[in-house]
Length: 215
Image 1 (spheres, rainbow, N blue to C red):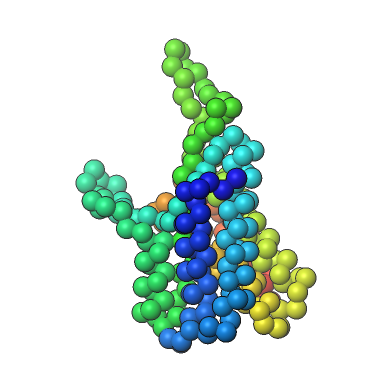
Image 2: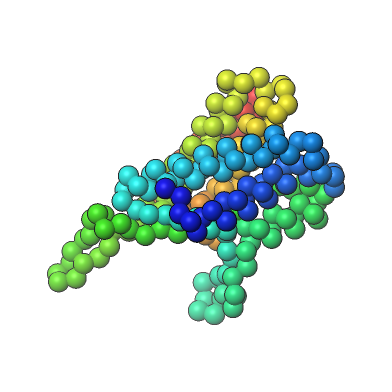
């Protein structure tokens, strides 16, 4: 299910996620690394597996990579000559500048392509692929939904007063919040571009999840 090209991006994202969680008030809590590593692995893989399963059901193949930022406008020349690995540098820079207060938990994006079994639409003598923005929106939505469900499960089935369980549900929620931001090629933008009603629904579910986790 996970391709060879995805191994390095996933490992890098988990390592960065772990370091961000251990870094607070300009100090690394190295003794908490094993716990935060486990939290990072569970969150990252929950999101990835949910998206992979959704993609497979609609005959689409997706591949994750470190989030790249290149285009900054809609004009023909509104892009950088070379993409920046924003999924690595932005979280790291914001953490250093804020002394660990800002934990920008967005590292990966995904590319998609239709599989041979996916239907095509015909118009005259031409055929058009049915790989639409709606497909990307559904994939990103179910990845987000799985993460929110994980946050709620952590709230109801584990005492949130004890470490590391409260941190688990809290950081699952933070991960969902950052990944719903409609920017660049992140999941939030894929949902918004594919379906505005679905994006509104995502926001509503996220607010509800936040209320459940913190109250």
